[in-house]
Length: 144
Image 1 (spheres, one colour):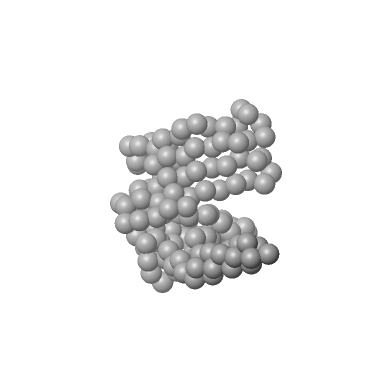
Image 2 (cartoon, helix red, strand yellow):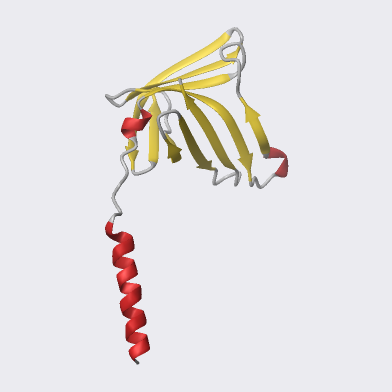
């Protein structure tokens, strides 16, 4: 009986100590600035042919690349270089909650939600899981 009480006490202590510092992380300050997608890995797809082990973006703007600008006021831009002569720019807004980034582009019905798995002053990684295809996309960005 003493062993059970001791075990319950220890587990309760670990739970309290382990949860003591749990606070929402504010990633917004680290997002502010201009970012470029540098790599995308797509895996775990229901259709194996949809998997992409390594898509690398280089040589922007002469090749396909995608850039984002996140501003302190919550506005943002999404700039896509589709080909050497094609360019698409969209504006919108973004919010964060914990490690989740949500952004909405003007004129687009659905907003985009990204799990920010890591971010620092020079690099960021997003993870996106598609419920329909089963694909997990890991998107690496570099701060410009």
